[in-house]
Length: 104
Image 1: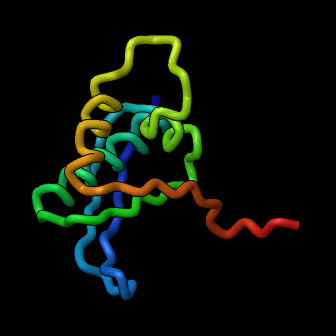
Image 2: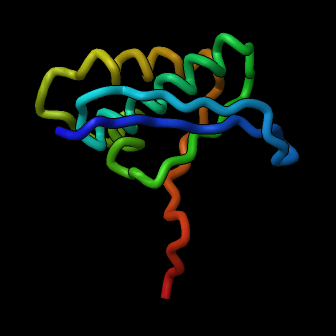
């Protein structure tokens, strides 16, 4: 495993930056780094009392896992459970995106 990190930003409905964060995670794989990033930002949004949140990621599998659209054959991890617990507190909408990729 490599040393991982995550980061993200918050924008208002007009696209203006409100807040950003960068965090070093330690030894982890890409899925864990992405999940920690999502959890950290959603937790921050809850603490800031944001009432509507759009979570955008290019990691579709993670979005599906968190949104419950992907059946896990293992016990749900604590991190996924914590993310799911934050969903109703911020009125979350998930978007899976492909940054910089153009469809042919």
